[in-house]
Image (tube, rainbow, N blue to C red; front, side, top):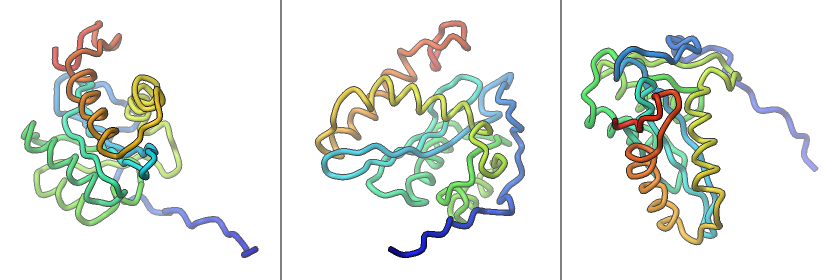
Length: 180
């Protein structure tokens, strides 16, 4: 068996931490958090990237793909930008490879977003989006075995656009939905 060595980690942050674990904001589009998750189907994995507005908990951008590349996170960011036309918004992510790419950083900067990344190896820096993924796992993903990528992608679309944004009530919002 080959000698397994730990993978090297980023030692230098790619962007400053502008959120500093404080996700409370007084109006929309001040702070967005973003992340990517994966879930298996019988055909293979599905990757989903989401951009979440911390003020309203609304999913403002999302993308689904069969591969984890810069494209899936950049497409989610593009959707958020085209839907919301932000100005001076902080976009906070972890140091995952898709978020440290030139394509993602350039797209954020050319539209006036301020890239922000948490401290390296600290799961609490992006806790709101991690909590979102936990709810999605419980409420959708782990409820059944998914046969095809298309089947899961359709279910994710319905969860994000119909259930989460329009029907799911949040205690942090006074039991209102993100759209309300």
